[in-house]
Image (tube, rainbow, N blue to C red; front, side, top):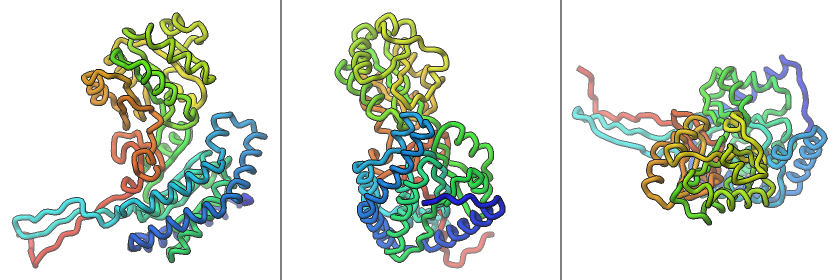
Length: 426
C-alpha cells in the first residue's frame, strides 16, 4: 500500500468524505440484525487467514523500514506479526462473533405511578475514531469490536504499521461487504501524514468519540486538541507487590511473567515492590530469575544490598514505563507502603498483590486506585481477550466509565424508551 501525501486542502476534503461515509454506515449498522454482524466478523476472520501471506509480506515491509529507522527493540516487538499473531487476530474476530450482541439489550425497566412504562436500552455510540501507534493487531481488534457493537470506525494507525494495517483493514472490509453491510463501516486513514490526526480531532460532526492508544505524547496531544469526547488509554505503569504473606514460588512466577512474558505491552510490570519483612527471603530468588531472563534491575539501597548486579534507581524510575527488559525495585513497609507508592507513582492501569493473607489482599484490592487490581495473578492479564471480551481497544485509566478493558459492550451508550397511553403532565 503506497502512502499518498495530499495537500492540506485535499487531505481535509478526503477526511471529511471519510467522515460522511462513516456516518452513513453507522446508520445502517445501528439497525443491522445481530446475525448479520456476526456473519461479517466470521467472514473477516476467514479473510485474515486466507490473506496470511499478504499480511506477513506487508508486515515485512513495515519491519524493514522500522529497522532502517533505528526503532527500538520493544517497539519492534509491538510491530512484528508472525504466523501465531495473525492466527490470534483471526481467532479474536471469531471470539467477537461468538459474543452476545449488546445492542438492543434492555438494561432496566420500570413503571411510574401514572402508568408510563420506561425502559433503558443499549444502543451504539455511532462513529468511533481510533488513533493508535505501532501495533497492527489493533486494526483487527478495534475494527471487530466496533462492528460487534454496531459502530462505524475510522482507524488512524501508526506510520510504522501502515502497510500491515492496510492489509488487515482490507480483510475486515471484505468480510463486512460479504455480509451485505457497508464496507465503509471500517475505514483506514489512507495516509501517513500527521496532519490527518489534527483533522480527525476536529471532526465533531462525523465522529462521536475518539480513542487514542499509544504513548504519553499521543494521549496528551489528543486530550489537549480534541473537540470530541476522549476515552483515554494512559501509559501502563504497572506494579507487582510481594507481600509478607506471599508464597515464594508464586512470587517468582507471577513477577517473572508480569515483567518478561512480553515487555512491550501495557500490562507489563514496570515496578516491583517487596515487603521489608520478606525482602531477604524472597527478593534474591525473584531477581535471579529476572537476571537469567535478561532483565536489568534498578533498585533502591535495600535492593542493591541484596543484589550486587542491580543499578541505582532514581526518582524518575518510579514513574517510567520502560516497555523493555528493565524493572525498578523497591522495598516498602507492608501493604500500606505498597498502596501509598502505587497510588502516588502509578498510572492507575493495572497492579497486583502476591499474598496468601486474605486481609492484606482485601485491603490492596479495595484501596489501590487502579482500573484493574489483581490478587495472585500476573499483570499481563490486563487484556480484554483474557477478560472474555474477545479483544479490547485499550485499557481506560480515567475515573469516568468506561474503565479498564474497553470491549464491545463498553463502546455503547443507551437511550430511554417511554411508552404511554395518552398521559399528559399536570
